[in-house]
Length: 232
Image: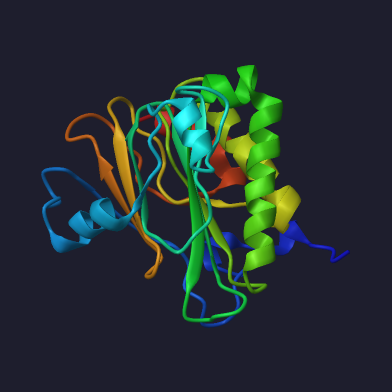
């Protein structure tokens, strides 16, 4: 089995990616700053995979999504479509993308939407198992050195740090590196995220008012970041 030296990999510098492979790039703004009626957003919503957190769990599972019941967590299938999820209040989202091992012109990706109380406490074993399955599926479908994984969303409350820690540990178990928190949490309100699979571009629509921490950082830095934010 291939051994990874995760502590030597700086995902902020894209050291886990082969030369020339694009990392996921975040475009961050509020609904007032973004025109959601542009072709980019309309195409993502028209042709993309809606990771609908509030959908009926039986309907989600019938479509191949992983889920432990309504408003617990949703993990999309892996394919080449754009993806989006809306209404990330305290919830976080993990976005993973890699290059098709058989066609270097194509990307495969999946996107998640999970509420902390569910995946940290109530449905933790199921969530870990389902997320690992998806990560291993992506790993098997993609060329080595082409997978990038990021975390977005959340509110700066007590379970935020635990959310990032668990997501990071599961990713590290499968890929040997820890994901980048591409955009930090906010104080209140919701995030909506739209992922352009082909260009590896993540659009993050943040609340129009209130505190939002838009810096990127490695998952290991989360405790220090939280201390920093609470001083502001």
